[in-house]
Amino acid sequence: MPNYILAIDQGTTSSRAIVFDIKGQPIATGQEEFTQHYPNNGWVEHDANDIWQSTLRSCQQAIKDANIGSDDLLGIGITNQRETTILWDRESGEPIANAIVWQDRRTSDYCQQLRAQGHEQSIQEKTGLLLDPYFSASKIRWLLDSIPGARAKADAGQLAFGTVDSFLLWKLTDGQEHSTDATNASRTMLFNIHEQCWDKDLLQLFDIPESLLPEVKDCAAEFGLCNPSLFGKEIPILGIAGDQQAALIGQACFEPGMAKSTYGTGCFFMLNTGEQALDSHNRLLTTVAYRLNGQAYYALEGSIFIAGAAIQWLRDGLHLISDAAETEALAKQTDSDHGVYLVPAFTGLGAPYWDPEARGALFGLTRDTGIKELVTAGLESVCYQTKDLQKAMEADGQRPVNLRVDGGMTKNNWVLQKLADILGATIDRPSCVETTALGAAYLVALQGGVFSSTDDICQLWQLDRRFDPQLSKHERDRRYQGWQDAVNRVRSS
Ligand SMILES: Nc1ncnc2c1ncn2[C@@H]1O[C@H](COP(=O)(O)OP(=O)(O)O)[C@@H](O)[C@H]1O
Ligand SMILES: O=P(O)(O)OC[C@H](O)CO
Image (cartoon, rainbow, N blue to C red; front, side, top):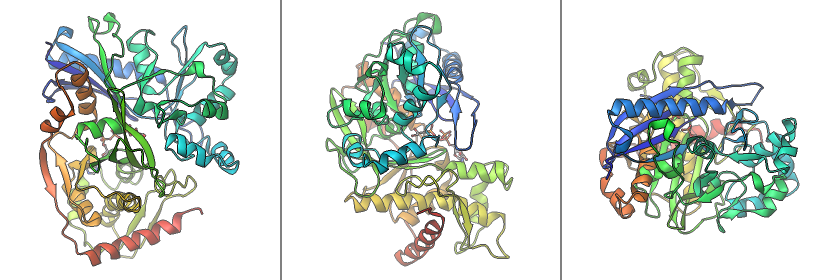
């Protein structure tokens, strides 16, 4: 049996491919950043061909650096930035416009209109999602109505819609496969997460023809064979999951009550609720965590749009640091009671506020405030935002035992200690923080017969370091109160 797996992790700012061995050890990585397009205020686009080409080159690089042949690959797994919307021509395979990225706010008014017409509750009941431009449905509608000729072509069955996984699959299989998995489908706002099918009422509401949509499969499934010209041989594609769901799998959070939080550009906190799709009464999302052997498992999710991006802003916008790694030493030098709060609502606030009109602010500045206090406030903002999510989960009756963390920011030990202090919870960092790609690789191992069940994945999870809370409850509450006051001052309503 081949001993390696190729995992594609197509993210918001870069495409990455990692070759893992079948025990989940990373062997080689290829990575490429690509251009972000901001054609209008609040608009964010990607050229879908950049997504494809950067992914392809990353795969070729990883295979080359791993020094393996395509015969050594058991299969390919795909994980991806979610919700980002692509429409392409079925005949030519060419996108009809740039991809509309998950962060894009152009359909804000349309979502507001649907809310005013009273559609939010039924949408939430069917999809687990809140009416926000974040999700794919309003983006598809915008493309159909705004790109000349798009609607006529869609009505004639000539167009295909996909989230990024689906578009990559189409490209990898040379147009043979138009599929997605249940986790990506659950982020479109067109998928009934209880019945596990596209919802006819929602298709009608958003005026989207069903012929656009991909087939929805389990996360570990036969997704076709890649075109042999790409890597020298037909390699089966055996796993797909949205990136946050893949991280949940890579973190082996398979029991109800287990949770992970990923700190990259944004932060995504997910708590497994098992076979039960829990309705949130506190503005969290209900989403498909994974679907295996036809059984869907669910999660509650809190999505924060700005986490590591706040550190990027301190670096690239304010030039206070030259490298994100410098933040740890600066935070250690800062008086822990410095009193400065940064609310990084640069693109509005995500969960649990869902306030697209809110904007960022700094509070508590004094004559003594300097670079280190601003940097520390940036790091702490990520911890306080996670606390907001923890409170919302608790109000929904859920409290994770330990929180498993991953993503670029979790290299920072100071942040993780602060997170433990502010949450009053134990934080566990695994030895492999490439959990997103790892999750995709594990899906391939499940489908390829290397693992017989998710129990095999649980056995591979290893702790690198545990962070226990050290702050008194009184101090924790006092500092969090300061954060809540700051957030209330930036909210638009
Ligand atoms: N040592 C660090 N301390 C704080 N933030 C960091 C550190 N290293 C990286 N980051 C932040 O982590 C983010 C990168 O994480 P990554 O998981 O690669 O993100 P993504 O997959 O969203 O591109 C960047 O926003 C960066 O600012
Ligand atoms: O590409 P990332 O890692 O920023 O993740 C984006 C999320 O999937 C958006 O929902």
